Length: 349
Image (cartoon, rainbow, N blue to C red; front, top):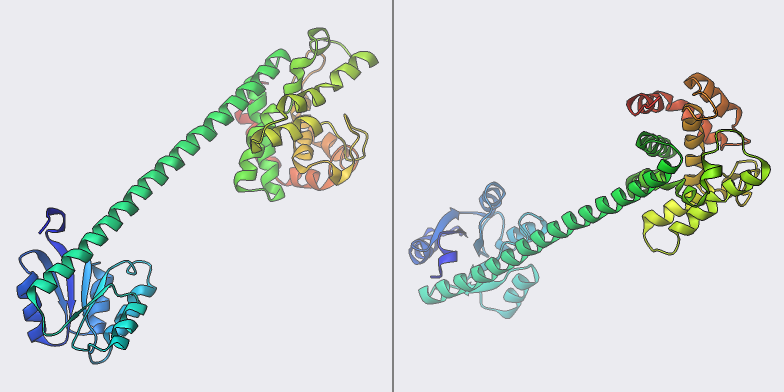
């Protein structure tokens, strides 16, 4: 007997004690043996302690071996346990029925010790190899999941840091990026976004102003009001950002590009760069637009003081239906306690 089969658990199910005694005598030195004398007891035993293999009599009172096998194969916990029927029936239709139900073999009565040992050993070996393969596949799948998560986290960290690079040129802090990402995630969740889409929004929002990298310092850092020519140049940061983020199949970069391009569009069509209107503006762009304005209003700039939260919220409400999607304004008000909590947690004001 090969070492990895030693003391495997075998369940013998038979209503005839003489048959049980014969099988016990043949197998007891090599395996741990359990016994059930009818189908109902067999099912209870298997539910309590999964055996590695079952030797199952066909003809039993109350519940036949065929019925026991059927119930075992219908249960995900027990369907992989190899079942060998033990029977005096030799007709081909009986064996066919057993194989159709999922049995792996037949041993006919009267028992031959050599045959019993050989068939048990063969099917246990098959099960051990199948279990080992399943375990290996499970380990590989877990490693793939871990690696995928690591790559995703790395990608998101790179995106976040690129967003930070753009904000440094605008005298912003990392807390601004963290607030925007969390505001957008909170509002996106209120809109019904979830799972991967919500995760993407949280990360992609960090790059909404990546296009500011392409704006000259004399305009970007000007402390006073921009003139019309300077303002036209400043507005190009939306298209620049979309261009920087374009051309890759990454879902994250694609969403980031959409946000960069559309977060200055307005619900009434008066925004830029494309003058999109209403629901023609992608939802993630509308969400980021509202959150970005709220953060801008409540943050200090070289040319203005920070607004109190209540004044900023009032301005957002006034902009509903013109600047902002009115539905998003209502949802923003509904989650205002969460927004204020984020503002306080990541405040640099």
